[in-house]
Amino acid sequence: MLKKLVAGITAAVLMGMSVSAFAVPPELLITEAYAFTGVLYFCDSTAKTVVLKDVRPLSTGEGAARMAVEAEYNELMMTDTGYSLQDGSKLNLEDLNVYADSNVRAVIVRNALGIKVVSLKFL
Image (cartoon, rainbow, N blue to C red; front, top):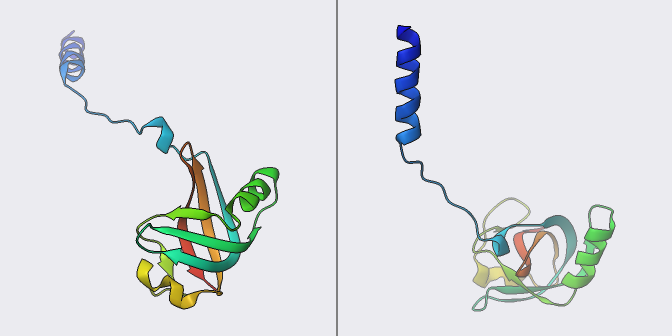
């Protein structure tokens, strides 16, 4: 009987406590993500965009092929971090044009706002 009373009081206290939670706006949810190889064509560090050419998906499938076509020669938004050389050393966005016409591996994601480069590594 005492166990049931303690369990009931504990359950009532836990249900009465406020729980904080948050949600991501639907337009920011990632719906697709693929890895690609390509060549860095141009980077606009002030607009935080990059243009890639010769974009080829590393995976097979219709979604990856469609995104590769969409990413080719288009300005793609970039995240604030995630650029590195082959040895792993990090780069600033302003320094990417020094490596123009270099081969890269990129991870590109899609959400409701479009496609975006989240990682760029020089090969």
